[in-house]
Length: 137
Image (tube, rainbow, N blue to C red; front, side):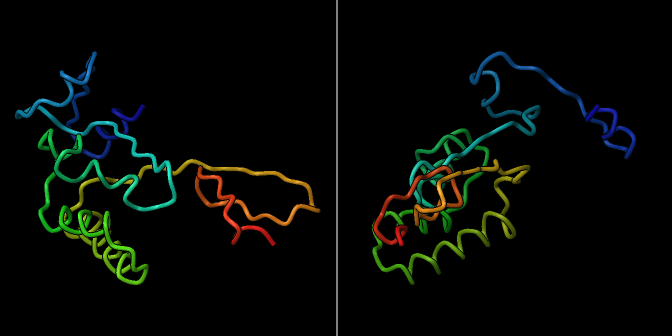
């Protein structure tokens, strides 16, 4: 269905099924769009950013590389000042989403949490379950 939809708007798209990552990742003239998923397993932006820096899959496969963005990741991995980290992350997002895009967000998973009314706890906006004191009434 997607292929026919693309054709209807004038895109000549060829789907090539691959069996393994060694067939998907090599550099070459026929490599195009691939499926990717980056999950953040702890509540910090660096959790999902590493794929886009030296040593990460996207970087090492030659799919996308940006030296400024890599420097920002290195900075964020050791900086403790939250104001500086927020400013750095804003810059990283400006680079990776606008100036030199390295990904496209197609969808975000919905997370639903239920609890009794007498429990004064606030669920996080991500998959992370935050039991720190600040989340309890």
